[in-house]
Image 1 (spheres, rainbow, N blue to C red):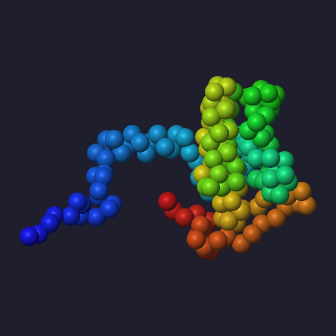
Image 2: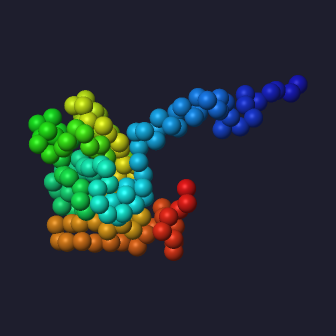
Image 3: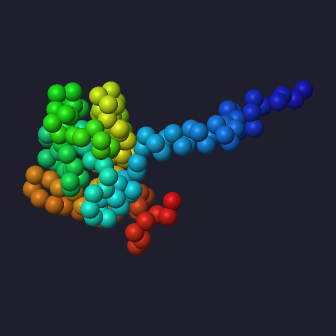
Length: 160
């Protein structure tokens, strides 16, 4: 007696979405997220990038390292201080530590509930530093070598 496996493989255990549903999902994802490389490119282009970058971490984390030009506004202070620091006409991009932290998501939610247009920077500060972009600490500016698992070696962009 032979038995039929439940699925051909675990990847296809749940079939892929139909193309129209996939397009809607991935399009929506891009409306909510920006990646570190795109944020860095927009900031490096000079002039007004069209958004404000917001670090939602604690003061201790901010002092340890943050993206140059970012505004520091810990998530817990958003309801009381957002109106003094941010213009509702300018989109906000939030970040926190990294992929293992949902602080940027909580900050984005708090801002959206107050009426701000907002995106979350995927990878957070961790990937900013790992991709070799300059960052500021309480001791001054620093830059690490790009991690070849997160950024192309010898190229300005990954081409994706």
